[in-house]
Image 1 (cartoon, one colour):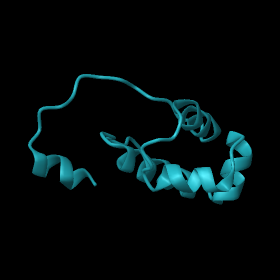
Image 2 (cartoon, helix red, strand yellow; image 1 turned 120 degrees about the horizontal axis):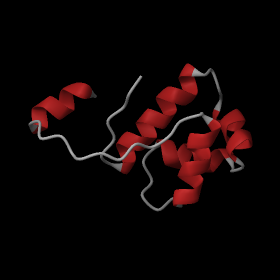
Image 3 (spheres, helix red, strand yellow; image 1 turned 30 degrees about the vertical axis):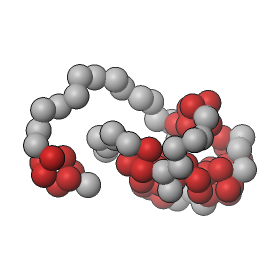
Image 4 (tube, one colour; image 1 turned 45 degrees about the vertical axis):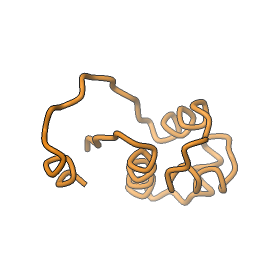
Length: 83
C-alpha cells in the first residue's frame, strides 16, 4: 500500500492505517518506537510540533520508509479522491 502524504494530518492518518493493518495498539506501537502512547496519539492526529526523530522512530517500528519525489501536478480534487 502506498500513501500520498502532504501534511502532518495526512501523515498521521497514514501511520494509523499502517499500525492498524499490523494489528498494533497505540501502546504496542509506542513500545516499539520508544515513545509514550500519548505521543503516538498526537502524531496520528496530525500534531505539527512533533520531532522528526519521533516520526522516524514510528516509521522504523512499522517497517516503513519515506520516499521523496517531485510533487504530482494533479488537481486538488484528484488528490482528495486518494483519501
